[in-house]
Image 1 (tube, rainbow, N blue to C red):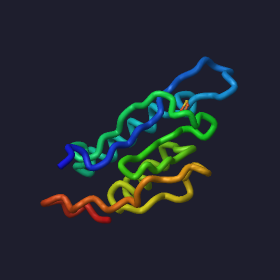
Image 2: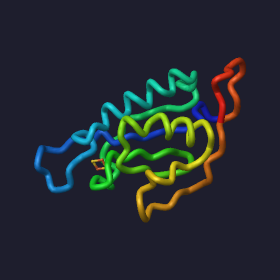
Image 3: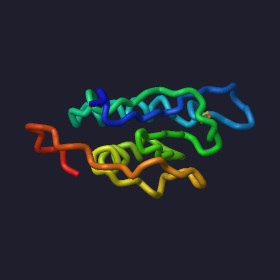
Length: 125
Ligand code: FES
């Protein structure tokens, strides 16, 4: 069995101010990743789901870019306010947050709910 059930890759690439493609860091990606880490820790999922900083994922204009594996789901325009929904609906519940999907980017697999955590009554899907 894999150590982690899911990996979230959050682009933290930073470009100089005024770059034509912009960058996720100037749109708040570091705060987004911190919010993911906090939300996962609060649910007792830090050992099962990893929120990793990533370099540029090449969808800069759609950032903040977040990719969830193994499903290969690409979210764009992710803000701190969206983190709880992604964690609860997708990571825990196994349902894609369609309003945040990047257009034209498919996915590899259908998400599945995380298995219940023993002794955790707040781990609901
Ligand atoms: S800067 Fe984030 S995807 Fe390129």
